[in-house]
Image (cartoon, rainbow, N blue to C red; front, side, top):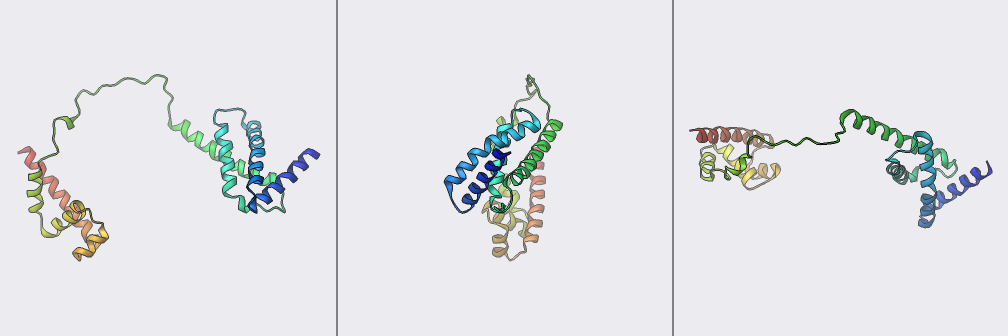
Length: 189
């Protein structure tokens, strides 16, 4: 019991010094805490392959909330509360992973019945696209030119055209729908 009390007092002192900016004290504290946390996790769950990741997760969490520790209070319960939360998070992640993933020893080989279509098709008919854009109503054509060709932001295009952001979105949606229809008919015809 005396060893635990001296360890507790040492950790309180190291954490107090670390909170005041003593890097060496903080380094010593982290060095001493890692095996303690590893043991606590091991007693709770036994040995498992992710234990080192969990120890690091606890230490990182402690680091991010170290300013909340009150040196007038015991250190170990504060640390173990952090460790319990990280262990619970880890357990939830594990359950989600096990529920949604299937381990496969050997991946089946699959081959596509068709070659990828990008080998046969070029970038498309640029002239047909220009003609289709030219046939769009003025508002839709402006939206395509500013938003897609000039890569302006919605805010910038709105300021340049005098249209609201919502009107530009509607015009762009309608323009894309019209272009798909026009270019689709040309390819089929």
